[in-house]
Length: 206
Image (cartoon, rainbow, N blue to C red; front, side, top):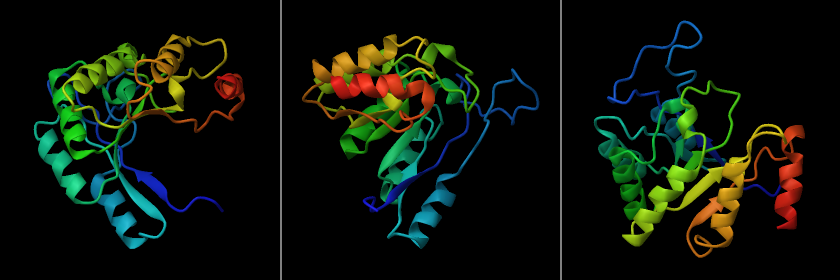
């Protein structure tokens, strides 16, 4: 088919605000990682099949050694960093996140960030559903000349047509105006699912 290679995605642990990784949750409502996929595993698979896969790393910015980990995965061939803030607990306004994004900008390493609703993994931090704070972080870094390439998963759409689509509107407005010439992109994967088709049609019109 038309796809040359796929990006395989790692998924880092949940970290609390203090940068501590709690144990795996044993019951609903307890913060922790629903899934974890190590960078080491994904990198090894990509090295075994370089004609099929590219290495998508995941590093939580609250890790004590986050910047060192970032440099390590970049040296290991990572083509992007994956974040899912509402599950992993990542506040884009946090100084640790800003420093991490700035380093990604220096490396030219894209950040694939998921904003909007998410039902596959637990929504543990509803405060980080909206794309607003991520855009504010990118705005500040752009003024400093350190904005990383950024990809917003699923155009920050809600799961169903009647969901809150203010995050989607803000992202599309930013793409067409303030960030029109910046390396900010919207990913349209999953927009052919039943609940998201109206958003795909709207995007096509715009």
